[in-house]
Length: 131
Image 1 (cartoon, rainbow, N blue to C red):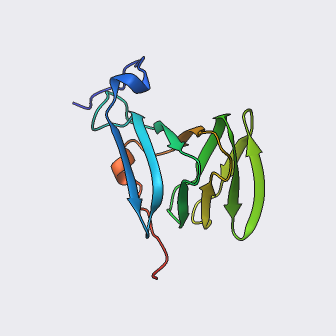
Image 2: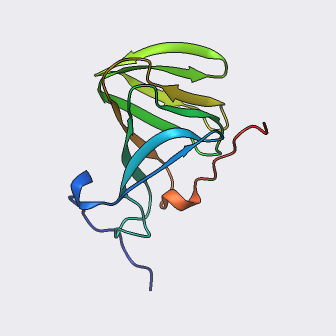
């Protein structure tokens, strides 16, 4: 018998903070809000990411497409070599396998909601260029 997804209502404060702070990945933190390994959901995973001033998620690729919704601050998104300034209220669609990254060059925090069409965040394999 297959388990069926259930409605979930949650907040970032209820979820542990995770992140990277190294030369390969950059400096970014996030709270995974929806993922089949932590919630009774099976078709999408989502969370909230934060970049402090000077923070960056280095350019990378992954198979599934992704959506960012910027809800606080400003930053620079780079997709396949093209840079665009984003600010609160901006939505970004990133095609699967497109090289992309985001950085915060402002003096305030940058926060965005991200969504993958995968049941588990662990199913999203990040591929960073070899240095």
